[in-house]
Image (cartoon, rainbow, N blue to C red; front, side, top):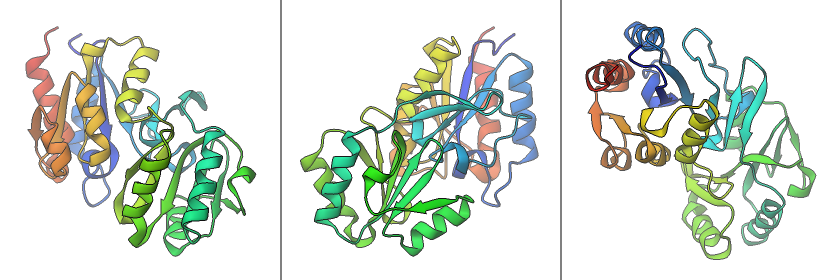
Length: 267
């Protein structure tokens, strides 16, 4: 079969889904064609296991990459394939941030629980949008380790928070996200390293790994893939890393990816 031992990973928002929050029928049809010809399809998202409610075995036939590549979770077996999480080193980093920036709202995403310090309206919106039950805590030592990721509502202090992290800590790493949030991950965790780690767990060679994504946090994934695809609505950073620019997420981006793969992959 043409797509045997091929892994295609797609970003979620802005790539797989159209702006109306739905997957277009032509995209589902293309994914079905890809899978019927031996392909493995999954989603790579910044969300964590309990916050990703869009898992659907009718079109995802592999573990899902979560927390921007820090973890892969098998929803069929209800278990992690891997978790490259933040350990004790994160406690010191969070305490240092709290001393320097006392009013930050900090979200700590563990394996089975979500905790928060100094809860802001933005944090409440995060939790409500993903149906999280969370606990209020006073310090990071009260949140069970490991953490899949940490989200900080930095608001107008986003730049200063990033500079502080870069100056004082080599582990963990961080990236800015929408709405002036700063996301902290374990050093070395990103969508690129996660994608290759998932491929290894599935015994899929790296030269049969493909990715499509639209955002800043997709760049590592696009670079490690054999071919990286970016919808035309993608960010400047993503577009600069693209091997192919495909139709927008509102015009069947993932379907266009599979059309190209159908032409460039030999049996």
